[in-house]
Length: 84
Image 1 (cartoon, rainbow, N blue to C red):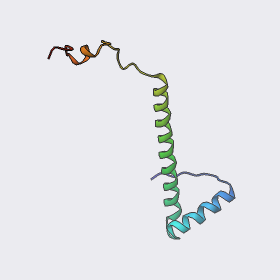
Image 2 (cartoon, rainbow, N blue to C red):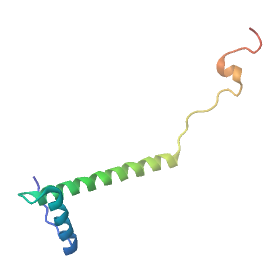
Image 3 (cartoon, rainbow, N blue to C red):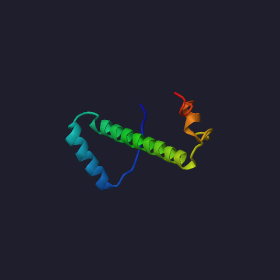
């Protein structure tokens, strides 16, 4: 388990502690659990944003699906017209 020392403004700290108490109750480790959950959510969000950016970049570059080898229906379906 790692240790992180951070500084946040007083208002944010107060609101975070209150939210953590409401969700997890007051008990040993509640603040650490709440912080871990918040960090996990933040990391997940950053990962999703990176995936979205990569996908958009791929869409913008485009890709070649292939070329049309035939422009006539009979060539596509290997049928001779009118010879049944």
